Image 1 (tube, rainbow, N blue to C red):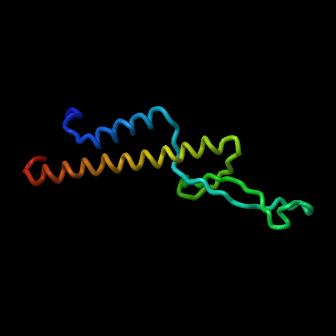
Image 2: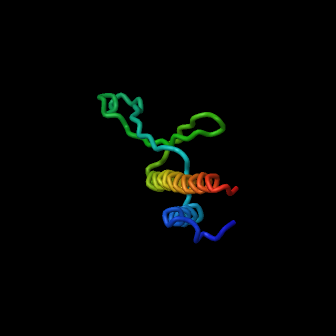
Image 3: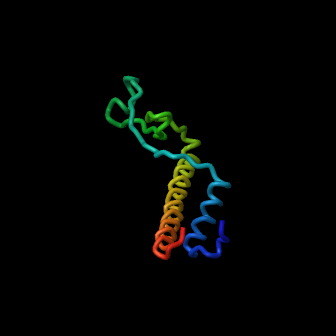
Length: 112
């Protein structure tokens, strides 16, 4: 593998940030969904239309969609983990685009 000095600064920056994210932070591929529900108690506000709000993590696991209830105390942590995953994917797109551009350039110049 060549030294990173041959890379454009955008790619070097993306690779550096990506490595930091993957080594220092937890990440989860999924989305957070807020859903209203009723509890079934006859005198509760939810019977009058003011539903209880719950947050769920929607993930694909073993080929099926799973909805995992997220307790309030973990909501911000899970939100950050989902955000880290999205940022990592964007950074990988930047790196991939740079690699593809290098491949196309090398094909035009006759290199491998």
